[in-house]
Length: 391
Image (cartoon, rainbow, N blue to C red; front, side):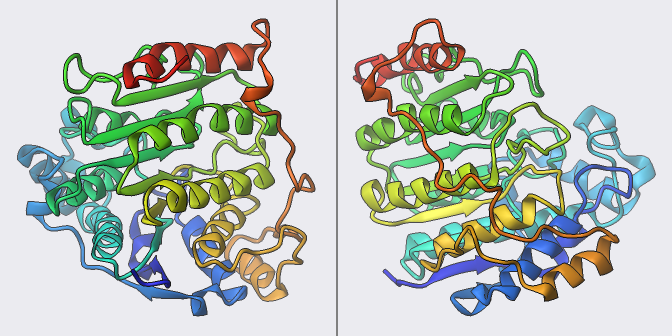
């Protein structure tokens, strides 16, 4: 296996643009790549652009009629069929939508292929992680589900066990749905409680299809306001034990930055420093249980200047085995880029001032009256026995 990391990047992914009023501003992708370059991380990885996912690849997950509907809306946005979730407030149709969406999907599929072949140990596509798209519909700012397509391609190539860990503030519902009945895929999602946030799924009791799929889905529904200590406590109380039991051949992770306390669309209170800590944990878990095979994706994140570029630049640095120090002063060239693109002033350091983040391990005991511990207990009791683990 190559010791080099792979960064999937094609400038054209910024064409995934729902318009100026939409919260998913593609400037977040351009600014992330700008910060990666400012730190010289583009010289510590192999930067590669994969071809767009073709129809045969898209059909590994998506229905033929849905792909046809996306292509039709892409050619004529006014003709978008809302029965497929297209042309809605969340997913407005735009010219070139199919091409931009297929390109992002192609980067995640290319990342998975390279890791499976051993051309790279780790591969990052921070433009990906569009985890809400369903087989037959768009949802939650997501047209094609690149995470599911990457996993489906790994299975097609012969993988027998793929683990997917999603730490976006929203439930990874599309990926869970795609592999609900497939025992070869373990999906784990940590997210804000569905009672409070889109897509209103991801309850602890959602554990996979009865029969072969049972125990293949694990959901941690976190209380609103959960901060660094609770978020890390929940992650470490659930994810490592499951991966140790499942022993995946590849670990696919989704790193939506919208858990951050500045994110305008959700209600968790996680810092950049905790996000970095979970990225490091995912890297370590890939080495511990997946022979180092790690595909890391982006996801949500709507504080497009202050949070997203810093979070995903940390992700690239960790994958490159060249982590950026949290106290690092951000290069002026990037702050100049931020001002030129947004007329905003960029952040000054790669930290929120909380590094290193402290948290209490689950093995030290739990408080049954604590809301965070109640959430973890609900998950462990619902899912762990199905995998032969003690709750």
